Image (cartoon, rainbow, N blue to C red; front, side, top):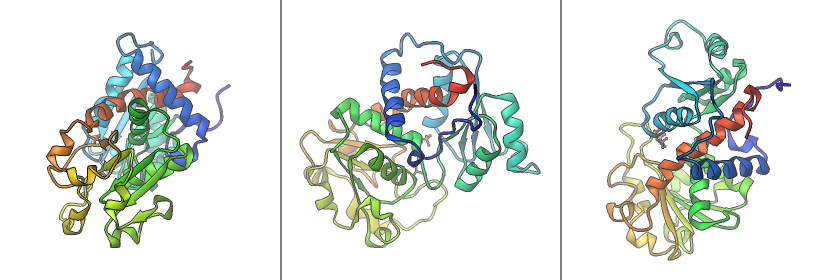
Length: 298
Ligand code: CP
Ligand code: NVA
């Protein structure tokens, strides 16, 4: 029997630990099967709705559906009536009559929630201004792949406090790892206490297992002043504070060479392209979780 509520994937804090671990375990399994992918999405269609640019999200969802036997269609906000006369409610209801799941990248998180409230098929958050849970599932998968069990690991974040940071913070509570965010003083002031915000970059990096950053200027923030972020650039001196086994992560795209030096981004500790690939496998597992009521068996 289908459950009354579609299985949305909106924020990590809404999931129990075991469900997240199960999705991650399935993601590893799907990666191992990448040359012989199980056709579990046969006959199913994903719609993807964007109001911002994307390389990884757009490609990895489309390829992921195709690899597992399904279909997808990409809609920019300007292609459909949502940008004009049609309401979010009507859009969600209508889209649900054509497709089996809806992936959404909408800046305003409230708009995504409204769409999910009216959709009768699962809605997947592919980034809003306050969260990016699919990115973090790929990041967790990458950490497990490179360093083993994530519990107890120290993940140190540098620079801005943004959508990616907020989803990392949600994950830290669920999967029991230490998270510390090194941010300029004024950014610390608006950060969630669960991020353990500090202005001391060197101390944050000490003994870290993972050093992670993201652009200081997220999409839609053009013209933002970046001077205050320079002490938080991830460079060789900062990496030297972390464990010898530490990895460097970045969701991409990088703003060259602001938040990270070229030396680190292209250096031996950088796992940024594995991280990008893992978007594909992590999202196939997220889709499989969401599409259970459409008959997908794992
Ligand atoms: N990391 C990420 O979400 O990249 P895109 O904006 O290219 O999808
Ligand atoms: N924080 C970035 C992430 C891009 C994937 C942004 O919102 O632009």
